Image (cartoon, rainbow, N blue to C red; front, side, top):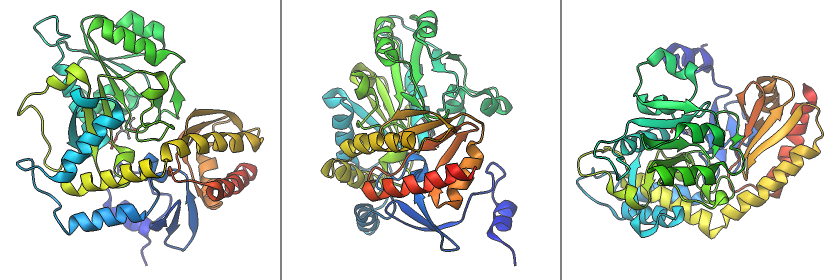
Length: 395
Ligand SMILES: *Cc1c(COP(=O)(O)O)cnc(C)c1O
């Protein structure tokens, strides 16, 4: 009899490595594999399943909307689409002058943002600017424009030439000050570098970036695809710095599992795109926008922004309290946590966690990424402590 691993490797594109398990069902913060083994899911589909698995509000939204009106094309509006755009303007702080473009993934949101950047003249010169700044080791997605922004040469090299004009700089205010001037169209930043292993920006970086971008007419574009939608204990991570960007890209946690991305613009950046300059067939269809509205309602009604902040603090204390010599530091904010290890054993540790019934992610060889659903409570934290402790002591 052929195993699912054999069927997977015979039919799936070789871009993917062999999966860690065959998952068949989920409920709340738990998932089950095809052998009936239960796992505590502290990765949440990489910060996607904001409300965990099979949340009744998501189930109801998807079921009702697909039985009512699933897709209409961009020749037509639908009530959930406009409602979601209005909510995102409010939650991001873009307010009345904001605008929203809907797409289907993080990379697509960054593609839209890349095109937005190309339209920036800084209000001073006639010709759009072509220089774009991004950070070394940043991750912005795998499509050609998003890949050009991604600061990981090993992901880019086989596919060059990618979209031009992007310069990668170190994550210091000094490097930014040296590179930025009025020939730059946009600065792309992740407030916390998630794929790099949950790496925080230096203190004060975002504020300084805001000042410099304003001074030089550069668009400050924040990629909050991983950090947004309450993940860091604020609706958006830039709130911690007390700033607003010119644009923010959103995806992962917005749909609670359905594919949706969004670009939200602030102020004058909302006037850059004109009719016909961008589009997406599926973008903002009633099915996904209805579901995202349901996700946002639960986050608001059940105070999950506050929960992310509180449980993040508790989780940090638990990890520190395990007293393992393998743990070097705990990074990140809210429920986006990076555990820096003293040895390059992240893959082994993540595998040991799977054995102990816990899903966490080896973001690189010496970093574990932890991103549980925003609904985690006392019971899940207690289970995490047991299972992560077991995994650590088994190495
Ligand atoms: C996941 C991610 C992306 C890419 O999103 P996809 O939906 O995989 O295209 C881009 N930027 C950041 C910060 C991400 O975490």
